[in-house]
Image (cartoon, rainbow, N blue to C red; front, side):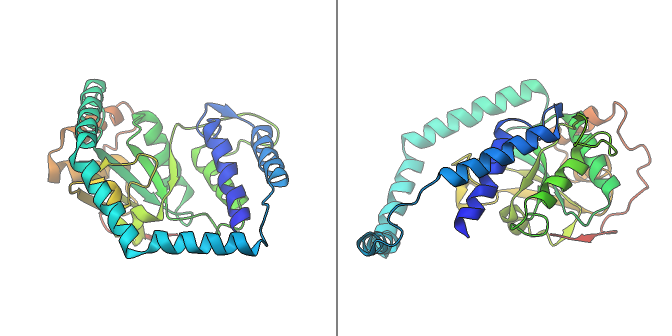
Length: 286
């Protein structure tokens, strides 16, 4: 079970690290190559000593010691010491530098996020409109978020098909025989974000302030990976991103939201603000 799960994540790693899912062009050969490399990786991996009783006993003992209250207390104490010491100064300097850079680029501040919570049960047109909007905005702090893999983690292809149908500019483009132009739109799988912001129906567009992470490689929805407090505002319903952000801007008066709306005004901005009411046309979250 764990090994098969590792293969799936390794395949995703190959696709994302190669920039294939968010590149201007990619082909079915690219995807097949990534899958082949993942399978080759699986066949070459050896796990020695799986039935070694002494090794299993030692591993169980080490795990028990790690889970002990004494060990966990020491880890917590050291974590707090690092947060309050020199590490805190380094983190503060880094975050301030990122804020200054983001401000100069005219996007969201580094500690702000816009999450577009989606599921595979949503209308394809809505999903593709969000992808087009993200491509136009081109801000790394805005992304679509899935709760989990489409049809579960046992099968990789349904999730890949969903991503392809959402971010491909020409919905009729067939990956098997031609290149397809892709929207520059990030789709993340993160159930912790759904949980943290209590998202039970989609689409839901959430604006968050105060996202200061301790470890950028971990989920932004993991509470103990964040410092300080976060303020969030959510708009539900099958509405355009521009419409949702207008509602959030009225509530927050946030400069970052105003800047994002200006980027959308170049053709995508929804002039008909009366279309799509808040809290309607919701789909169940995957």
